[in-house]
Image (tube, rainbow, N blue to C red; front, side, top):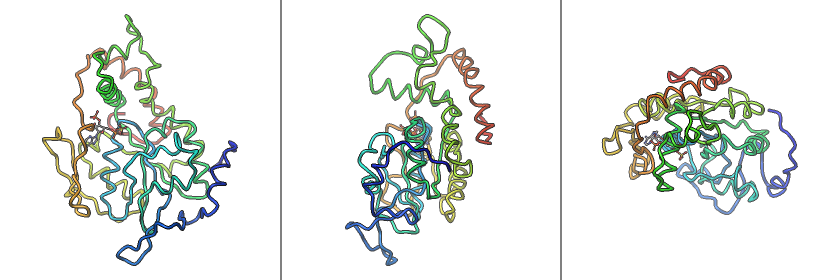
Length: 298
Ligand SMILES: Nc1ncnc2c1ncn2[C@@H]1O[C@H](COP(=O)(O)OS(=O)(=O)O)[C@@H](OP(=O)(O)O)[C@H]1O
């Protein structure tokens, strides 16, 4: 991994006790777990860096059912927003975990944020960090982003009002929910610092239909023993048939996602879909080439 110099050494000055090799820091929050190991805050060994609205929350929830995963359930936004707080702050956002566990976080903003790319590369320059990127059909992703936006703004504008430049059939390429779906544009920036074998791609469309298949691959990528299987999932009709997890390891937790996930999507016009399929064709082909993946919707 080649690391640029961006004059951001202040981050490292704040972390004199940082041990690059074992990702731990002695602090006063130690706890003994039931195997006698000491629980501490650890930096992540794997980060779900994106992509927004592709199923990042579901993926983190599902993988955190694994007994060897300790996940920060909040989006930490360290590398894009809270970097000035320093690495100790970041570490302390992580849950207590034992050395053999894999600490994880997810912040989908990292994927599209240029500063996050080189900051993550620099922070983890001596560590074999694993990156997970979940992607889905970019048209559905854009609709999901649109639904979130209109829910928050209580707006009546249609999807088409945003997609096309006013009174035209020209795609508004400046609209961020459309831009994000050109995944290859962002991925090439990550590939300047990370090799493909450090990155795992999850098919967000399949995560909704057959989550156990995606979870199997994620567990393999993280070198975990396979705990999460088909039998751990059920489809909840109250959750619009999205999958939920039976978490045997944390049986009191609700296995479904909250009400802001799995929202109803509006039907979009067939012509809009055709225009967008065309719009994303080049990006999708490029992604297949550079990521060496071939998901059915790509
Ligand atoms: N199991 C399960 N339950 C509910 N929702 C699920 C699930 N798996 C994937 N999804 C899809 O995840 C979409 C939200 O993606 P993210 O979690 O990445 O959103 S965010 O970026 O954190 O806001 C969310 O988008 P919306 O359908 O628009 O709400 C879902 O389509």
